[in-house]
Image 1 (cartoon, helix red, strand yellow):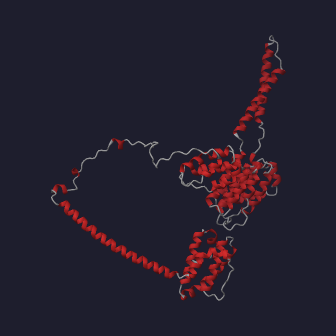
Image 2: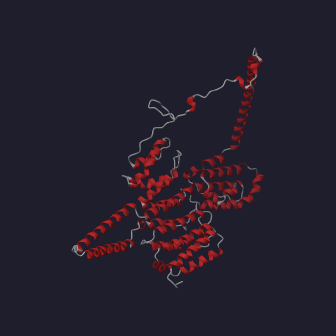
Length: 518
């Protein structure tokens, strides 16, 4: 127990209930151990006690820190190391030590022995009562057998004969089952009347906290996405609180497609309010979020960036209609410029018409081939999405992205690569590419294959997001290093997916380069 208590991973990743259980068990064991046992564990426990004390002193959690220091005081006193440690504990901090001080001050063995004796006496009384009840039941069963056998013919005592039982016919009501519809006069608890949908988005958010009324929760959960997409009245005031509540919302009523609809609602919040992305990323990195919610937030960031970077169908239709209007105007102007020829010169009329149609078709073809550039809506918010996400080198007690949580690191880099591709042709794309390249430069030789694959994806995203001239202007000195890295991965990496991705990256870099430049 002392070895588990002294481990850093136990202090950082265990819940409060697990820590309390280990701490109480450790204090009870050392307090009631015999002197011989204490002498035997004294020299073995010295190193573990020293390591555990250092980890608890560095902990930022006040409760865990105080309880660890209190246990250190008592263990050094009971194991008699010769130098008792004393820490200053204020009365406010002492509220966290109520259970540990109760174990230290009171004689818990006497309490346990008394409770054990009381339980033994209660068990004995229950056994006696059970024996009496069994005897009385046996007597009753014997009397019933005697009464049933008196005066009964032998044929009626044969219970193995199937002919003695009357045939059972299933009624038609049971054969044709129909679902019972609740009437207005009946009070049937199994049928719940559907709740009307809320009219305001704030009422929807309040209804999500309904713990007992399933119909109210379903009605609010069903219309919430529509309110967000329409930017309903009051949405901007509660957007941050709403998206946080949706991340931690649990499926209490086994709602149909709960996870998919929850994902869509969070994505809608990010699309309608992209300024919430840094707040969600901070929530993803915090101790408050479990690992499944971290992956959920990353998937929502990627999907919202995709929707922001694509052109709306409505704007596409508007541009199509504007193109038709321009074509009609050009036709009208050509008719005005070229007046009708005399009717006698019918060959000239035909040639003129053919020439008009030929000019029209060639101009239409040229205009259709040259597409007008469209504004990337994700470009305005790309910095808020990508910059907080790349804070992987920041120290966090509950996360070790380089070793234990390397799978989360791979997911973060994959999401960053997707965001980089969504930010293509933006004004901020060169700056984002430089940030991403600096972030993944130290991870090219990571021991986890998923992280190495994510690094290759980031390099490929940088190549695809930047125009050729901008790419070679920014990364002139790094292109040869990237190509050498791809060659090394193709020849030496044990992961097949990494080798395939290295081939793709090598082809992408070579296709962007001008001829005879590399």
